[in-house]
Image 1 (cartoon, rainbow, N blue to C red):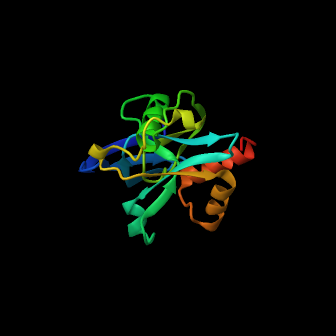
Image 2 (cartoon, rainbow, N blue to C red):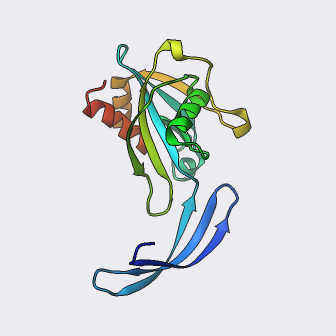
Amino acid sequence: MIDNVKVISTEILSDNWYILKKITYEYKKKDGCVLTQTREAYDRGNGATVLLYNKEQRTIILTKQFRLPTFINGNDSGILIEACAGLLDKDNAEVAIKRETEEETGYKIKDVKKIFEAYMSPGSVTEILYFFIAEYSSAMKVNEGGGLEEEEENIEVIETNIDVAMKMMESGEIKDAKTIMLLQYVKLKGIL
C-alpha cells in the first residue's frame, strides 16, 4: 500500500462471471485532509490484444462478435469489430496472446512485439491490457479460428486493407478502443 491510501473494508458483491467488489477506503489528499470513499471495482483479470498485419498486402486481421454490454448501451446489433484479444488466464501476456490469436483467428504466430500497456476503464475495472502487433502471412493459417466452442465464442474473422479499416474507424463502424489504439499505432509508426 502507498502512504496516502488505506483499505478499510472489501465486500464481494458478485463472483458470478468475474468478481465485483465494493471497497471502502481512506484517501489522504495533498492538503492532508482524509476522505473516506466507497467504490466498486470489477476484476476480470488482465488481458492482451494484438493487431495482425501483413506489410506486403497492407492488410490486417480483425474479429467480429456480439458484445452484450454494447448492446444494452445502444449498439443495436451488439456486434463489434475488434482486434484479437483475450484474458491472460495465468499465462504471461505473450503466451496468452499467441494462444488467443490461434483460437480466435486461426493464425499461429511465432513473433509478437509488445508496444505498450494500458488501463482501459480505470474508474471501475482493474484490468490492464497488454498491446501487441505481429506480422502474419497466409502460411500461418492453421485453422478457421472463430474461438472455442466450450467458451461459447462465435467469432467471425475479417481480413481487410488498412485504409479500409481506418475509414471504418472514422465512420464509427469500428468503435472498440483497443482496436482504435492499435490502428492508430500502426499508422503513426508508419508500419502500414
